[in-house]
Amino acid sequence: MEDKEFMLIEYQKSADMYSRGVDIGFSATKNFLILNGILVTAFQLQNSSGGGLDLIKRIQILAPWAGLVLSVVYLLCVSPYQSHLKNCLVRCVEIEEKFGGFLFTRNNQISGRKIHTGIFLYAISLVFIAAWLFFIVLSLKA
Image (tube, rainbow, N blue to C red; front, side):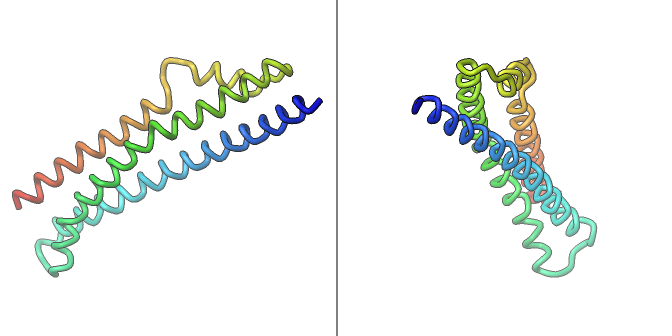
């Protein structure tokens, strides 16, 4: 009987961690895109103003570097994030196989398809890394 109680608690915790992980990943991606948008705006603001304050020139220099660092950190977080979600999902599937559940079993079938969110997250960060490197080259030439 203790084994079933333990499995139920473990299932609940794994499901909760999976759900929180999805929420955190969604929020992190949304914030990553917003911050990159702000940094692109800051970089372009100086370019369109035609000179101006020393502070604006510093922002133009720092924005691409900050964006590059942000994009690299985001890229480095994708793999551990995906591993965490997969671990929670697999554990829930294992418990469901013993007790007859289907929620995570079907979710696992969907996530096992060829296009993963991880590929999408890697692509987003690599596009931003390439863009920031391009902006850095532009700012060094100016």
